[in-house]
Image 1 (tube, rainbow, N blue to C red):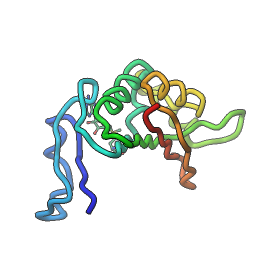
Image 2: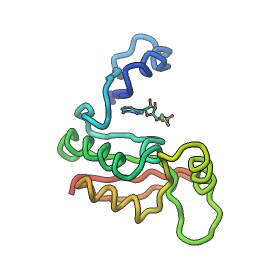
Image 3: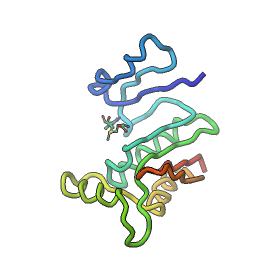
Image 4: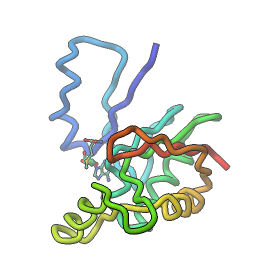
Length: 142
Ligand SMILES: C[S@@+](CC[C@H](N)C(=O)[O-])C[C@H]1O[C@@H](n2cnc3c(N)ncnc32)[C@H](O)[C@@H]1O
């Protein structure tokens, strides 16, 4: 009974692979710009999205989700959550790669992520450790 919306830039969507599922009314494509608005939904899955952007842009994306989300909705950010201290973490290597290739993105600590959510009137409810180097950060409306 789940229904999914793949939201991306108009020139990117034609390269989606959902078509491989065949005629299927469980999903739809929605072209747009997440700095302007996003479709109404119950859950927003932002995988490898926030870490592409500076804080200001990342907050703008979260605010668009906050404005569009259905009552009781949730935002799920899937990115590395950098642990405190000098412990090894694959997210730190990704951070170095981002810094050397382009200057837009960055990996963030839990505290940094909580601040971004708060700026978008969202509250972090849990951080799910996936056993992989990305975690799922769940947030709801304040
Ligand atoms: C790093 S990819 C992540 C894709 C996918 N979530 C994944 O995990 O493989 C970032 C995605 O954000 C999309 N994107 C970039 N700017 C956008 C915008 N302004 N509005 C909507 N999507 C955008 C890109 O086209 C790209 O598909």
